[in-house]
Image (cartoon, rainbow, N blue to C red):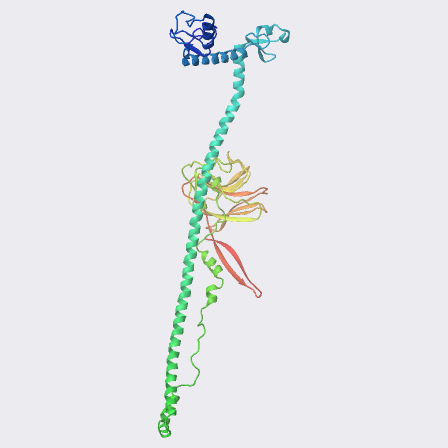
Length: 478
């Protein structure tokens, strides 16, 4: 199709592009209408070009030539339309210049017109190049923004996947915890029912033995009554002869009261049902523990690994985690899940590494994606020495004594944060500051050995008063 010229597709009669072309036996082609008109005037069916006489009155349409002509017409229309767009609307001249004042392409006639008097012009190619460069500069921030958006979308996708993984993991751990509780309750139920059955068996056996003994007594009494009544029905002489023996027989049966139920013969229902749920819960405390601080995995640096119950942390291989706003990027930090903005709070930490660590509290507003400069209060171990830090205050070097279990005590209202050595029950250091925002416990570590929040056990005490019984609950460190 590309090799066909306009001359090849032109009818020799009308000198225009073929319309419904027909091909003759001599291989010449014409428009169907043009050929009919020609033959109508000449009165003979001959070829208008070579004059060859034709025997076919209705020559066939050439579909190939028809398709070529239609395609050629469409391309020519498209070309004419494009060329007309590149011509000046006013003068139908080619647009060769660019008016810098009006910021539009113009022709040479426009340049000399009053409309563009005293205007500045540039050749079309130079103006196009300058404007391409300007547009490229304007496009660069958009391209940068697109790059950032794609990165954010990637983080969103990772976050969505992490949410699914978190939900699945959390659901599995919840089921495991409840399975343990269900197992404890099932075992406790079985043990208590077993105790009830044992008591039932013992007391039923006691009642059976007493009933059997009573039946024997009843049988003996019935025999005595039957024999005595029979002798009483005998003749007088016979009766009197056996009277003494009958009296002795009757007197052998004591007339005192029969056997009685002993105290405690019934099932001790109160023992089995009284405060049942409370007693089970009291026993359950041996199976559970309470941690005053739960670590928040969503704040943990990617190098940190938390244990399953979120009470200890160690340093491990870097994990691929979502870059969420809560997470620390520059420091190996993890925060407690709950912050404090009033009251007093204590938690104990067990330290097993002697390389680098720090513990304390930090303001909620501290920046988490850069180096932390201020807004925290801590004691730490680094380069073989213990120190207390709370920038911008100067660092204070502490005792060289090895610390393994430390109590952190926060009195938010009084503005005091104290640290104590649990092993020696001695004071380490106290910060005094007027706190103004929520504080979160935190741990920093660079060691594979874990730092652990020491759990506390639940104790239950009862105090009975004349009017009512009250209970209070306390927490005691293990």
